[in-house]
Length: 144
Image (cartoon, rainbow, N blue to C red; front, side):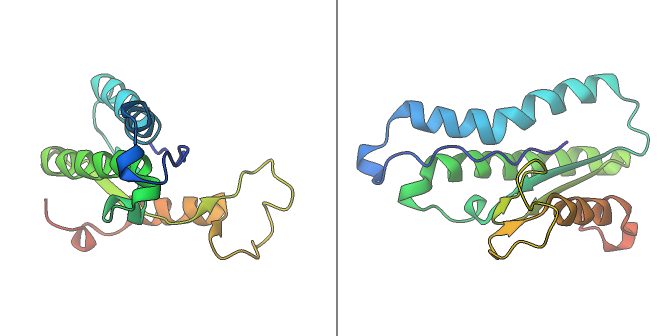
């Protein structure tokens, strides 16, 4: 399961930040992954399951003008880490990939072409990274 939805940045200053902006950052960047993941884990037998969440450098650093986004990504990263520690011994591969930059939407003009803006990734490139992580050798996976 993945989600890479960018929330509006919020206030330009931490001092002007509203709780609703933080909640929106959590709703879009954390709960949009948390809720379906929890539901899917109740329905699966865990065989060959991989949970790959897409994060951003914002999960490692806080910037005042994008703080709601950062908080949502921090929550996603720590959730992914906890899932990996609990589910790894059961054979479930959990990863938190940091893929910075916007993902070009398949319906946008030219999205199948190589983006000229280095901050924009294609869905194909992001998918290739996820497939690599899903099928990498167990010896390459970090310890849980």
